[in-house]
Image (tube, rainbow, N blue to C red; front, side, top):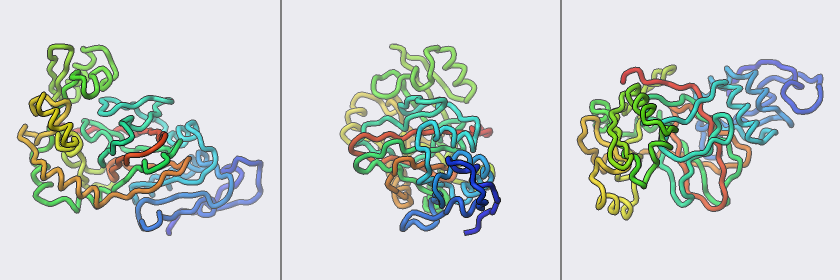
Length: 348
């Protein structure tokens, strides 16, 4: 595998005392793939003992970013210094300005400076493949996952290359969504999903209104301190560096067809389709066919790569090029998340 060869003092990259040996980057780490998954994701592991991942990343930032653009996903495995603090330092070594989790679609807790728990849904539920915040007008370009505690059973974070996903989705589906885009309708305060206070991280109605106006989101205050929003967003996105077009939306996630049949029937017996806690339509407000979204879900299932988390693993993703999800799991599980390099869709 072709790699840059930047000679550096070995002592800079280890937690032990000074050494006189000089090793190349290629000798400090080794690259490979997961068994049976040639080409995706890239796996980076230490090739010698006591490699300091944070220092190595600081000195090899260009190498990491180049590999991320090439592969879309990098799994860092087997490095010393396993801790949440080390994880934050590592992410900041690559992108110093981590970003907040705003306009939330799922419950999370902040456990460090812009370090969050992964989505806190019940362990028996899986989370479909998606790009982080693709329902929004802006989203992180990079995202990291850190395994502080793997589950006893399952609990993987499947990933999929959207280079493959985009090619697998039927042309007529892509053309329809590109033309019409996606409308997301959310109803906060119904007691089923997130409250608007949690989603927007404020108790101030005026702050919510100002945010909605800024990001071209229609809003309507309703009785009982409820809020309804409508926003038309992209169905595909173009990578700002590679120029590649990828499938980039939450339609299959927000649409009522994503809910289990028993829960779906219960919700539809109580709410109209535009009054559900969340739902997705074509950008002109017409219904999206459930069969179309099931085709999209099937493509993601075909493209998904699942691996078993090991404690201390860090997975770094290009949020344009790679989707991620979550398996159901048994036993305690703790995955932390960091995001960086906010991209704003200027076409809205």
